[in-house]
Image (tube, rainbow, N blue to C red; front, side, top):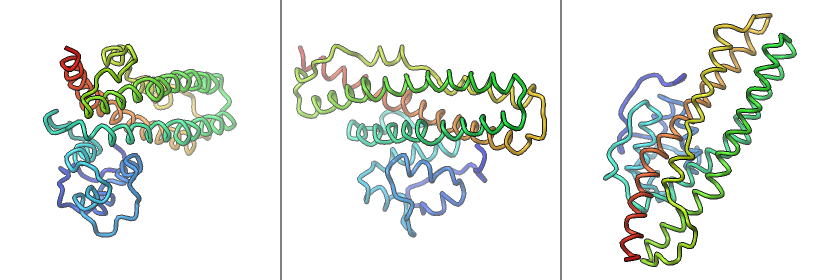
Length: 244
């Protein structure tokens, strides 16, 4: 984490403005949750009530941004599903339409200053990586998230037969990959091996952007792996019991 001044446990009585001052990444978390930055002197509890978000879920995500692990599954409920999906979908928008274009622009500027063949290879690698990530995000948007919403609606109405798709979260687990891991190779190249040629500023900007993206992707994956997938597994058990 680049900007976090200190690792502190986030609590419901804290002011959201204080969280942002201590860790500016919290602005991005609020954006992913669909919360406007104009927070005044409101506490986390106030904001969660205003936006109908579970305080426990908000605290979990905020503490992830401060470097702490999620709490136990018993802290979350099916009513959190909608908020989780909003968060993840907004992450996808951020990756595809803001962060990846920014990084691509930095790579292009980098090549104009330092036209070593290795820089060109970085551009090709990132394009390949971006295509892979886009495929993964599209799979979540078009297959996983609609399935989770339909399953949640069916469980709430106790109508399991409304789920027509032949799908299981097990398939998602198999398809699910840690897409942030491949960023390590790119960072290592920039830090350790690529020859330098009056490119200190753009190299630093590119590295900051990669670290920021990696940090957000890591939280994104933790939310899916430790909160969303276990909740969906519980819903599938209930659905199966309704089918019997």
